[in-house]
Amino acid sequence: MPIQTVYARETLPDSWTKSVFLAGPTPRKGGPLSWRPEALRVLEAQGYDGVVFVPEDRDINGCALNPEDYEAQILWEHEALRRADAIVFWVPRDLSIDLTLLSTPSGARTIDVKDMLKFPAFTTNIEWGEWWDTGKVALGYPPNAPKMGYFRTKAKWKRIPVASTLEETLSAALEIIGEGAFREGGETSIPIGIWRTPTFVRWHAAQKAAGNVLLDARVLWTYRTGRQGERLFFWAIDTDMRVGAEGRVFKDGVVVGRPDISVTILLGPDRAFQTEVVLVKEFRPAATTSDGYVHEGAGGSSWDELTPIELAAAEAIEETGVALTTSRLRDLGERQLLPTLCAHRAHVYVGRLTSAEMDALRRRKDRPLGNLRDGERTWVEFHTFRGLFDGTGEGSLDVDWSTLGMIFLGFYRHM
Picture 1 (cartoon, rainbow, N blue to C red):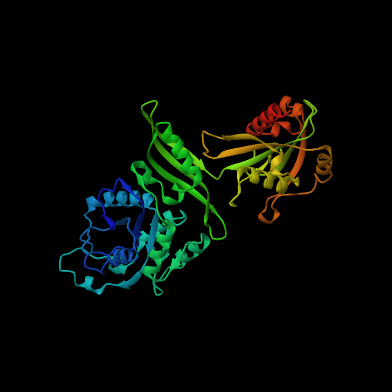
Picture 2 (tube, rainbow, N blue to C red):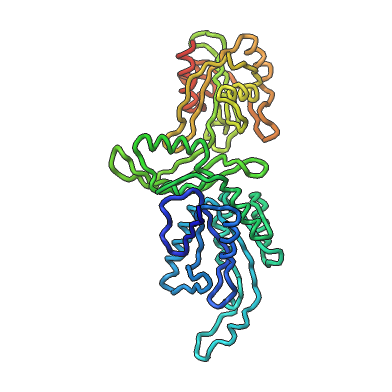
């Protein structure tokens, strides 16, 4: 398929599989020629077959906005930038003076020195500040481009690909997109990086199955992990949804996504309501508990190709030191944890420990566990079922509602 080029202030398409925004300095009328026609030729040669947003008029080297067009131009650029799967920042900055402007006819307005700069890329600086940390940016600039140290430093912080040729910069952007994915209507407001996460896929499918329609979304933030920032761990979007069952539009609904987790509730030998429950204590900055720690079942997420039950067993040994085979774990199913805000789900299991295993845990309860290399430090603690549920056990009031629900269901099903 040929490239679909959308120029400034033209209507954005209603659907696409992949999209790129060409950000960077735009020439003034009569100044240096635009670099964007060459970018389009390179993209075509590289086999790109998606949408390209070009923030210039179709008369690409004669662009001169009237004052009444300026706000419309800014609005168009903002909409195209937020919907683009990748943003190419090609910055051939040139701060030399365009001497031809000195021959301004008599009676014309006085020319400000800054208006005589050939390719200052002042607006590009602002756009970079808005979009540099979105995970969908590729940066490029010629080796002789001045005043690029700020760009270069910020790119290093977020491991943004940086290139010195237009071809390499465009290649880096296409690598961000990959194969793309078909989206239409409000779905085009979801960049490809979020669109292909398992959490978003399931959330979107569930909403569609319920008869709801995503009308629009605005990415609030993303959080990446990994040595190269390659893992999109958290994301948050602000959505406008048509609620099918109610025939209304629900605006500004925030959805937070992260990978699913697996949690193991460890129970000691059956002693009815005096059965012991092993929890993990770990510092978390968001905690509002009496000690600043969370108190919950051993659990977490992983980028390894583990099944939920394999992950549950792995988290149990990492956070408590108890090695359980998957055959010793009873499945409680999976449910959403915080459906008013978060789209991820928890797979919950129950493991019954022997008296010997409980004694071994007690002997090392003051020893920190967890992935100490990554700053995770966990401690095991012991509660009784009665102490947790009548609120008399030490620290029982610091156990959150979700964890209490998991413990109750595990106890109820597997006494």
